[in-house]
Image (cartoon, rainbow, N blue to C red):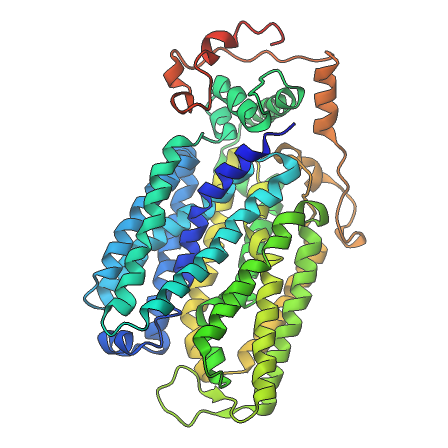
Length: 536
């Protein structure tokens, strides 16, 4: 029986990296309309405000790219810790900023952390999770992200009643707390068993797999041995190919997977909901919602609640079908918002406002737009939101996983940066037409997923070659290729004694050399007893 509690506990804690991402998304939304922020920073509008908002995305591009080699060199865990230190420094600079330049530098440093954690936290979660709950485990990253958005926004809402610069300085300072917890807590968590395998630390691989998969850390459990052998075989095959990871990324075998991973991350941004997470308060204010702060809070609460079905059932209904249904649902909402704005809206007579098209005196139209915003957030949180993080690390082979996920995450952040810079001026210049662009992007996303994106549910990470080498056209199936149960068959062979494994020579000379030994993840006698097990 899988030791599910351990996997969930570790994944929930490491999802603090996603909480930081959520803090980043709403770090400006509750502050933009406050008088203190406008007065202190000179009421930034248009491209100026877009630059402040987008500074984190710019830093995240660099952070995501750097994770491609830091994640392989230092390990996933240590690189996440390094990122959390950068986040603390960024939070200090933001909360003590004396002008826009210092604020942007602080947000750039925080962005470096977000780039690293947004790439490596899903990889870490994927690599420790068993195939049957992998989607659920990685979806916790998005759930933490959604919680971070709401928590930060509520902090800002509470601070908005203060009559001082603490309105914006206090929320930015509080951001440092979860990063400190993440940095300290990671010392008690194991490294990824697949990263350890890539470094030939096989003793630790077996014991960490046993800890993650069995209640009593049984290294002779058939499923543990089957997964160990599958990882070992995959490492051997990858090394026999004798090609550099950078060269392989553009090779025939990986090119398709890399482009799909990058496309998923890019499409998740251009379909529009992520941008509305930043600027929803502008849209709600433009339709005459009297308490736009409360309405925005409800928007974020719906975003959290709608992630829960994906956490519970994504490993049953799959990634592909969720993306298809999500695209159509969001497209409908975006077209509806744009149509109502076009039909019932008019120019804003008040100058120097972030929105130039408003709806006045029509509560039905305003409420319909509000409801459509909520529905689009729910559709995104149940589909594209969590799946954009689980899909790239799932489909990438171990040797190039960090680099492939880094490139796909970089694509996400470049798109995020472009939209962060473009959305404020576009809201002013083309107003309601922007929602038709978002709607059309969702239609394009539906077509792409239907034709190019295969299903990965219930597959082990080592079985993705079979998924992508399958010859049937994807458009014939809504849910993808059925699972063949290879890992279960391998475990059965171990149980019946048909096959056995022979681990390579031990890498650790002392118990303390085994990752996690000092904190209980590997029994104290694990190394000395390892070679005495007759089954091995």
